[in-house]
Amino acid sequence: MEKSPAVAYIPIQEGCNHCCTYCIVPYTRGRELSRPFKDILRDTEHAANTGAIETCFLGQNVNGYKYTDETTGKTHRLSDLIKETAKLSPIKRIRFTSSYPTEMTDDLIDMFRTEPKLLPFLNMPIQSGSQNVLTRMNRPYGLKLYIDIVDKLKSARPDIQISSDFIVGFPGETDSDFEQTMEIAKKIKYINSYSFKYSPRPHTAAALMKDQIPENIKTERLAKLDSYLNELQRSFNEACIGKTMECLCEGPDKTGKHLVYRTPYMQQCIVNVKSANCEKQLARIRITAANKASLRGEFIL
Ligand code: SF4
Image (cartoon, rainbow, N blue to C red; front, side, top):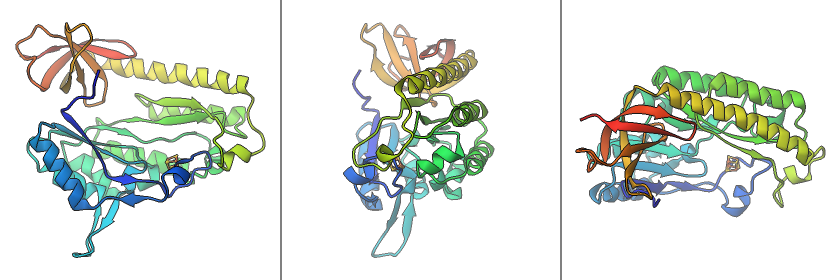
């Protein structure tokens, strides 16, 4: 299915200053560069005037967005973009991806408390639950800091859910390091995550590290983590049965018999097309069934 025209994907920054030892972004995209605040607002307004209902701000390090206006001297952050975008009445939903944990500043966390248009869902990759591995990855946030940020987010918005990316089999990862990754997944209860086997990228520091992990161990660890993350996803989806959520229409499925919606948690929700409400792009849908991959629902008329 094509991307929904109701969602405006707006790049706000490029590049990354974090230099994780496995990542080629700092080499391919360079240092962080944030787009001018006014240009982004112009794009957002244009999108709102031409049918967008949802705005998704994009960037390799999206929550590191920082732009200082030369004329006024004022520095704008992602929280300022969210505030201004929320004033546009056609825009009903706002989200952003992908976030770096230490850039989740208090002003941004507070947006989840004060701005109802900001969806209660955040992708905040942790990559590993082991402090040793995080240090080798050059992701120097403490696990405590990450957990504190999640706690602050939950206190700002009790219904918020978090997703993450994971890398398993990073050079030097021991069984105990891997078990710590399983532990953090259990603690945070991520609802929807991406996990990958570490694979060396040319020109990166990690590619030259000793103690590369054998492929069969990476495969075993990935299977174990994936199986648990799938269980978490299924159990969150099943917990949604009986709830009513405001969902955004992405269009018909291949059969034309159903409409595909996105919940505020980015779950896919399939609804039978035979309904009086099916023209509405944003509809209240009661969830009637769920599996690991998607939900089924019916319109609340
Ligand atoms: S924060 Fe993300 S984009 Fe930046 S270097 Fe690390 S993995 Fe790459």
